[in-house]
Length: 346
Image (cartoon, rainbow, N blue to C red; front, side):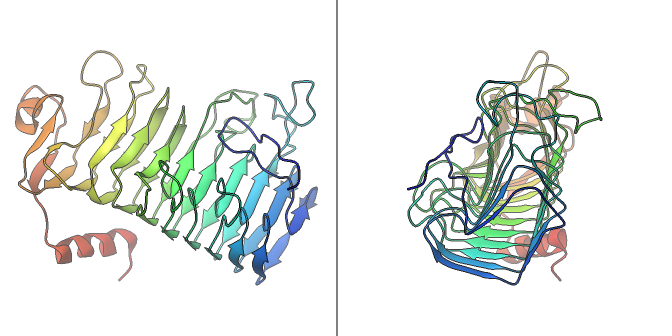
């Protein structure tokens, strides 16, 4: 019941507290600890922190979030808030690896395994996460970029809420940083999501939920299962690229909004196994800002695929979606081999 604050432009309010609380550290190491039956957050990394490592810990039966990173900005009268992140008073270059995280959000449903707000350049890698009420990994804003989400296993997320998926992001608020090219800019750099195994069961409706303006994500070489849509981008989102992923038994490959020319979404070289025939996405079909779509392999129960209001073959005959093919569902063994090869699991 400690006071909550608004970290940034996402949905969440948060307590700037934790069983372990750190500000002003460099080269922090939290290793081989057990966080069990806590009322609130496990670890809070607040304000300036650099080059820390949170590794090989177990988090179980927590009231709220396991690991939260929450920075400070300036530019308004409210202390620690505003558009200006150029002073670097944020968690950066933190490494979250090899943690085992489950049974979260017992009291606070807006909680996750990993949360970051006004933080950037972090690595979330090789963790196992399951059994939580909301998204397992949540980026509350688009501050800075250069974070990596890689080689994680996630399932049983969104058990007590709708929407979202194993991963969720928002980007409703402009921040100025020097991350992209060393000069002050409102443009973030790329974030990367790759080589993850994510199962969007319970009420996870999306594999990767790039919500509300999210931009500059490269999502590739992942396996996603059971979501209603593989790629999502809405409410002004742009410059999100999905390529070389496998989407297993999803409603469709992608659901996005329109973009301006030069800031299009990309969806290419993916394998999509759909639960029904029909559209495998909703690209922008004409004019400037057409979605870049090509070289996908689409599988449906009967092999019938449509795009932009016509059959795939007719759409391609007009010079669109080069290299994409359609066919009937692969055998489970064949699909499993694709996944093993993609993630180098053999």
